[in-house]
Every structure is written in C-alpha cells, then in structure tokens.
Amino acid sequence: MVLCGAMLMAAGPGTASGGPVDPRPVVLSARWTTEPVRANRTENLQVTAADPNDVITEVDVVWGDGVISFADVICSGRTATVRLDHRFPRRGLFVVQVVAISSDTCQGGGRQASPVFPVATLVL
Image 1 (tube, helix red, strand yellow):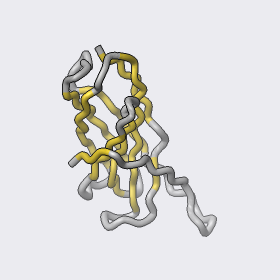
Image 2: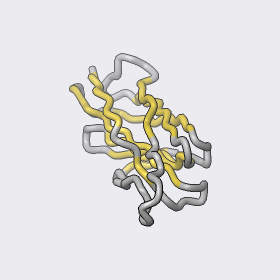
Image 3: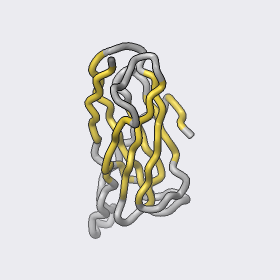
Image 4: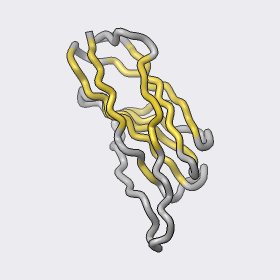
C-alpha cells in the first residue's frame, strides 16, 4: 500500500541510557524497474532496505517534484523489498530521496531512520 502526503521521519541512532548504539537501517538499493523513466507514465521504483537488529516497517520517498510517498511494510523482518509507483508530471532531472524506517518489533517502538539514499533520475 502506498499513501501520499507523509513526511519523512528524522530519527537518530543510539539509546537514551548511553548504552551501545543500535545500528541504523540502511537502504541497500533503489532502482527503476523500467528505463528510461518517462514523464506522465506510471513508473515503479523498487527499494530494498535492511536493519541487522530490527524490523523494517516503512519506506519513505521524496520524489523531487513536490510529492512525498510512504509504503508500510507488514512485518517483513530485517530485510524488505517494496515497489512504489510514481508519475512524474514533467521531463527533467529529479533527485529522488529514499529513507527506510525500522522499529524494535513489528508493533513499533524504538523507531530509527536510515541515511538518505539519493537516486538521480532523468525523466524523458
């Protein structure tokens, strides 16, 4: 399921007690399923993210054209792959920004965000 209009979360690593730092999630890849990417056509971005200790729960995307989307991941485990659909309204160069969100458990808690994974996208 993909919903539009969400905001990217910014969460920092570490613990309040000063204990060991929990590694942040990471976006392993983000690639277009068809190329070239074309304006006014629905395109698919496939994102794979992982967290060595926690559960990937969400993937957020800022498309670079004013639209922000997120995909909830249904308790997939430490690695998740999702496909997000998007239609660019015009030609141009867009920097798509992808962030993975993880939680301690499937029920939430201890949310962390990955570093931003940029995808330079030329839309024809």
